[in-house]
View 1: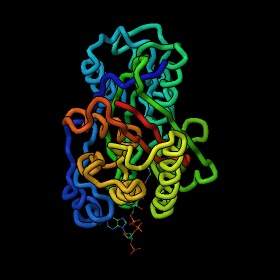
View 2: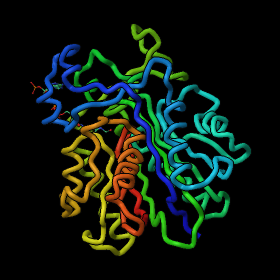
View 3: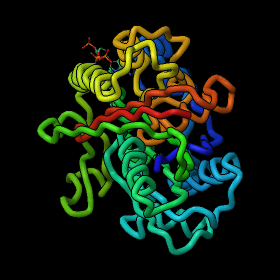
View 4: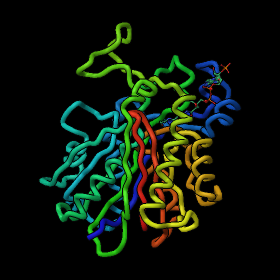
Length: 321
Ligand code: UT7
């Protein structure tokens, strides 16, 4: 038994914030942001709009694309680092919205790699016959943990949601997943506060993203290069066998480095970072949905998904669409 992606969906909140708007509130320029990151604009959730609100929109679109009913979903694995509440978990909250009661529903927290982690977990449930149709979500409201007084991170992060529907199938689908973490790098990219550890004095019990960008950049390029090699070796593939790269959308320069590693033209890379910045767990399913809906990614194509984030965590998945 394999698990196959039978539908994709995504959602971006209505408010679009171009680089030019950030020029007014911090010492930055549209030119710097474009050149160093590739980002041109991003979407911010409305006041009161939550991670689960956005996930519901993306999930409904994936369910519709799959041609099934919400009640057909018997597993939800929800990748996020910005859940609405400590509990109920975001998966259970989404389950209630969709009205598909009774199956397992839980969240997976691995920062920007959360969607890849969630996909890997859901794939194993389906392969084991413990779920027939699994909804896998990546959704974030990163603006709620963004420090808008820190220009080195504030220009990067944004909000959004993406989802895929996995179904048990005899056909090839998710071929292999490769997950990694190295917690010894945790101080390079982290959030300053949380329930158990508490909050830094002077933050008004708020938590903010901190990142040593240059260091994270270098490790991301190395580790993503390694995981690409791992995927090819594990599946006895040549670089040229991969039709599409669907990368985590953190920085165009990291995406280009991975494409170079694959000897791949940027024409075969789904790039959305210019339109929504770094949406963490949401970025891979957002890009996948874009590629599927605009007709570039077709049934039967071999697609490599990859992501890298806080933890540090990283991973990849090889998928036959
Ligand atoms: O998704 C999770 C994983 N995260 C990532 O993959 C992010 C990895 N890191 C990056 O994408 C890049 O390191 C950044 C985009 C965060 C930064 O780009 P960089 O080319 O590494 O810049 P830098 O940190 O080396 O800074 C270069 C200069 C500095 O000035 P000096 O020291 O050279 O005078 C910064 O102060 O750019 C300055 N700078 C800015 N200037 C204008 C930093 N942020 C800004 C800004 N606007 N927003």
